[in-house]
Length: 119
Image 1 (cartoon, rainbow, N blue to C red):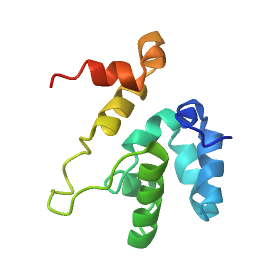
Image 2: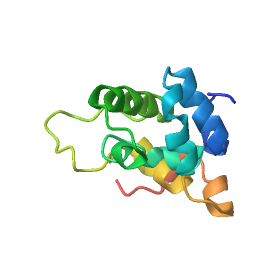
Image 3: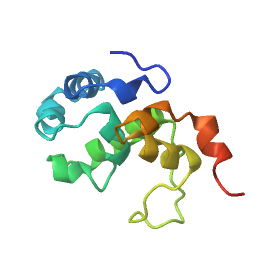
Image 4: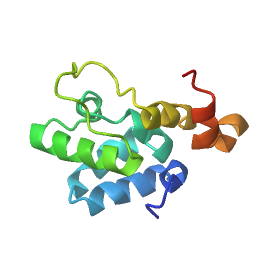
């Protein structure tokens, strides 16, 4: 398991569980494996989604969400924004595309994605 740029997209459920354990949360490994959370699905793991996985401790939710954002390279949410709104920065939008499977998603680069965004 590696934490290099975008390599997390190739992570299996086991890799994600090992990463969660490395963050100091071995007791949550089953929450990720039982829900089949792969590296591609990490883009959807946030403060709203973690309780659905069975993680309900608020401090743990904050810490895990922060580590997920850091891993994905997503900027911190602004305090003035509603927490119900999904992340909309460029990296978050790109990773939503990369979370899908298929040749198109696999071959899409960040620069190609940025070139396709209307300015």
